[in-house]
Figure 1 (cartoon, one colour):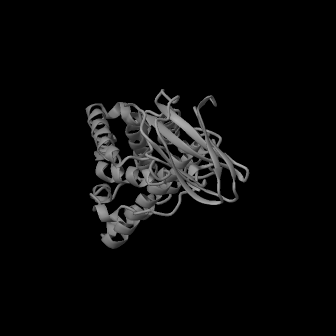
Figure 2 (cartoon, rainbow, N blue to C red; figure 1 turned 90 degrees about the horizontal axis):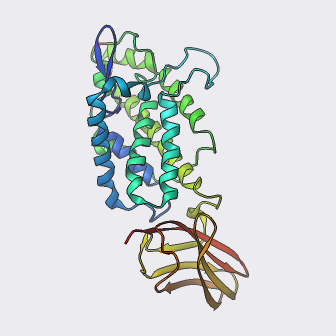
Figure 3 (cartoon, rainbow, N blue to C red; figure 1 turned 180 degrees about the vertical axis):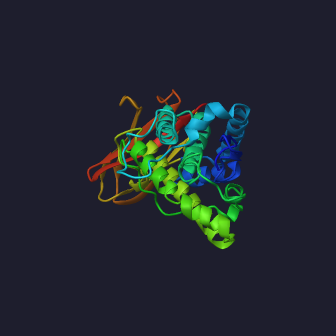
Length: 325
C-alpha cells in the first residue's frame, strides 16, 4: 500500500505505496476472516476504513516522522537476524501491532479492534513491498514504483478461506524480518519488469506480494487471539455460543455435542479465572444439544469471558465477548 506517506531521497521524491490504502483495508478484512465464527462483527468493517483514513491523513501531514516505521533496510547478505533492526522500523512496528491487537482482544472492548486490525494490516503490507525494504538510494526504473502502487480491483484481493496457522509465540518480530528480507530480494526483479514494461509479470508480482501480506496478517490475527488465554483455539472446540458478542441480559444459546449421557454444568469465567456464572444443565442424553440460558446474570463487566461446559465425557470451551449495553 503502503499508506499515504512520501519517501524522499536526495534525488527525487517517491510515494512509498506498494498497495493503496483501500487494498490494505481489504487485507484487514481478509485477516478478520481468520477469527472464530461470530467473533468479528461485519458492522466494524466501516470502522477499519475510518481508522485507515485517519492514519493516512496523519502521516501525510508529517511524513518524515512516520517514515521509519514503514521501512526496513534489509542487509544485502548474511543470515536472517534481528541485529540490523531498529526499534523504529517496519518489523518492530508489525510486532507491536500484533501485541496491540492481542491487548484489544483481551480487553473485550470491540471498539478497539478495528484500529488495531488496521494498524496490523498496514504494517503487513509494508513488509511485503520490495521498495519499502531496500535502500532509498537505489536506482529506480521510471514509473516502476507508481506502477507497482496502482489500485488493485477488489476481486484481486485474495479471498482466503482456508484456516490460518498461527504465528509461533514470540516470533512476530523474526517473521516480520524474514518477510522484509524476502521482499527486498525481489527488488531487482521488480526493476527489470518495470524497465521492460512487462505488465503481466508486474501484475503477478503485485498480487503475489498482496497474497504474502494477507497471509502474514491472518497468521498474526490468529496469534493475537490465542494469546488472550492459554485455552485451545475456540474454532476447534465443540461448543458454539450465540449471540457473540452478548449485550446485557440477552439469552445465550449453547450448541454442543455430548458423547455420552450424564450431568452437565455450564460456567462462565473472566480473564482472571474468576467464575462469573454457574448453571447446572441437568442430565443430558448423548448427542447434539441446543440449550437457551435466559438472563445470564453475574457477568456484568464488559470484556472477554470463557464459557465452559463440563460433562462426564469431557470439557467444551468457547470465548464469549460481553459488550457494553
